[in-house]
Image (cartoon, rainbow, N blue to C red; front, side, top):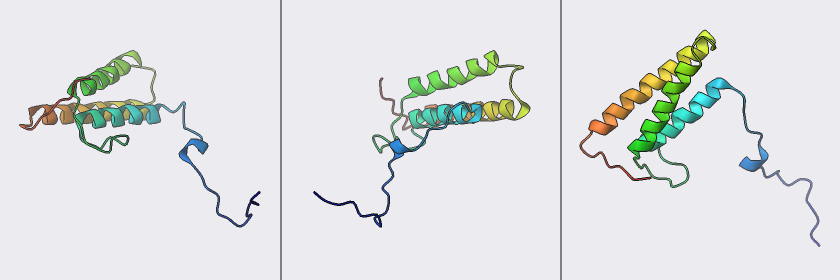
Amino acid sequence: MAEEDDDAPETRRASDMPLPGGDFRMFILKLNFQALIALGVVENPVTQRRERNLPHARMVIDDLRMLREKTKGNLSPEEEAHLSKALSDLQFQFVRVAESPDSEETES
């Protein structure tokens, strides 16, 4: 039986790290990242490719719009500004990507 070496460096995996939760700005960032992946602006970390899925991107943008309406008056000024900025940036990116001549959509 092999003995464990106390001097060996610890191996840490992503699954060992605690996940942040309950933070509104982090939630918006996660949705924003999801939309950027669907727009093909950033690489999908699972497939390691840029793939466009405009219907999925539209769904995430619509969800963020709905979230803004449903939380109106209940957010701090910083949270409201963060949500509005994320939404306007995504809407700009959506139009830019949708109007590009090489706009390739994948069906989901």
